[in-house]
Length: 390
Image (cartoon, rainbow, N blue to C red; front, side):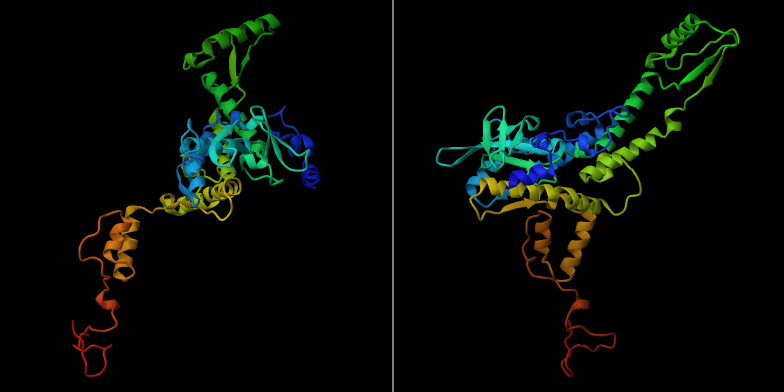
């Protein structure tokens, strides 16, 4: 039933294919270049977003309640650290939509190591009615022997590449970068027309064109004066990069990358519009709209494939939403003055050593339940006849 369901949702050629782009609509390869996931890394906003998310997920302190699973998660292999393993797996998932690692077990089922594989070489086999993975290194592997991190996908068992799903934006970004590169390779000069007052032969026109290109194209000829004779005129027939709005278009494309991956624009060192809130607010938005989703996907796969049931996984995301020192001090002061925190508890949150005599809560005089005097000298909260002065 699984095989029929998936093949009804997807043509069979899609299963295990990391470039499912032909179904998205009309082919635009003749208009703008098509970008595959690896080529997308050439563009700085994509590279920054992918490496940022992968590195942030990799550096989050995480643990598993089961000691054997946790040991493997903290030391996945002998030739790769936990940070390197997690970052590599996330980069593959962010680019190709899927990342894979073989779960190496002993004959008795004891976990030994996780061996990552190249995403573009793995395919999904549903001929047996259940998912199995075809690999060039290890042959056909059962699903329980492969750790599979996925990006969102319609089937649920195979992730779709964000680069391929959003190929229009990626192709537009590629076209903009190509346009900028060609323009600066031509010393930033706009396209011009050389107007001669006389009728020229094809050979003469080619000679004038070759002479202009040899003297004025290329960055090494930038600023070189143009000398014309015989009544020849120069007319500009195209705009400069500023006139074409290329910079505005590139900012929009960077905003598209932010939307695709859920990264705030300021995290890509770019301002694509008005920004609301503080850095803490942006950090919380980044955690809620991006990091937590990947943490949940990884956690589900880890516990399902490595655990035996009943385990829990813990993620410490506090460092990503920690406010500035001024906001921390103001909040701690409010807590101490309100009696919610002791001064040593406040020091502990700042990673400071406790001091003697600071373990008792402090309550401000104006927040007490009695014991003070008014400007008339009488305690208004105490019972009649029992004044309670400080």
